[in-house]
Length: 441
Image 1: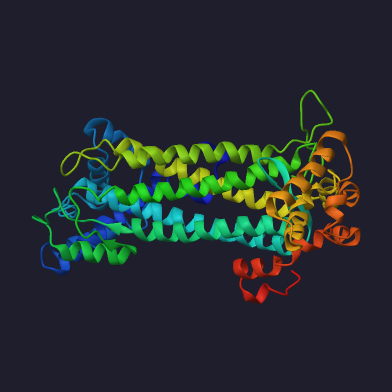
Image 2: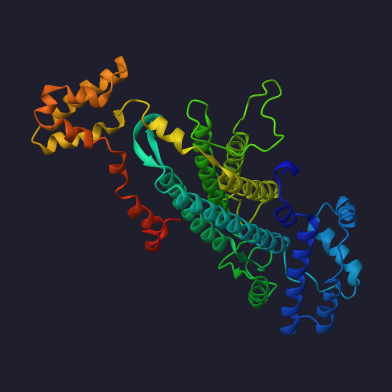
């Protein structure tokens, strides 16, 4: 992670200070549980909590680790310096490093998920507002990048809202799946620690005990978590690409807000570029890239190796910090997106009525013309628009085979863009709930 694409609340979750504070809480709660079970003296457990309000000296822990080559031992040594070596002698009893590392990592992921959930909720609010605002704002729909049939900008926003709502459900599920802890000892057998210690620690820290751990918590949970972040990132890019297309000069149906004093190019003063959306595309690529090593972490040797460790030290902060920034940036883009409805209508009518070809096709079949003949009649007039720049309605009204089935006034009625809005409210009710069916937004 780099400061340019980082927000402070998410960065704080991954700071050394936060990590050591979580390690301390795990150890202290474990001591409480062991004291309650009569395994260690109560006064020793109480003594550990003397470090509750002490700021751990990160530099000192690093200094110890330079000798021990073991981060958990370095932390425990420093903890002993704070509370007293004799008082701390029962800390970590029966535990293994992964009990601390894995449980702490999952706590960090849960906290990160909570921020990302809030990010998604804010994005959904922005998307809903813009969808309601532009429920009936006509624009041309496109397939293969080519004009297809009329739709509305509100439907575009509603589609993105539905996708992000699914992502919110996925993220909540991933959060629940990764919210487990393990205090089970060297190979997960509880040989030297009572399972009730694990239960107490997890309860105090808002986790569920891992049903069966080895020396580590199973990494399929983490694979699912980071895969979910990758799916959300793909959805971010999906929105960003649409905005980038709308801002193209030839399209210009909407554009990112251009701030006073903002510059678009060092060489061309006229430029107003979709830099935020392009940035979001790049950030999405990075978040997706972090999913693959998380998937590969699932295959560890026997009860444990540390091939996953270096990976998670990178992807944990990088994936969550990057996605947090991307979601916040996308929300800002949606909130401040400048929309040009007149340009949307201009683009819709750019090819002189071609976008109503299916309406004519279906009307002809309703009049008894075979689908094959109807398609032939409509297509031959449509090709004149493509190749000769003719007006589609005029050509159809001048085609004797077409007017043999449809009167010129009937053909003209089929060119009403409002025909494509008949079920917009039904779709909105599906996405936002029945209370939106007649709401104006």
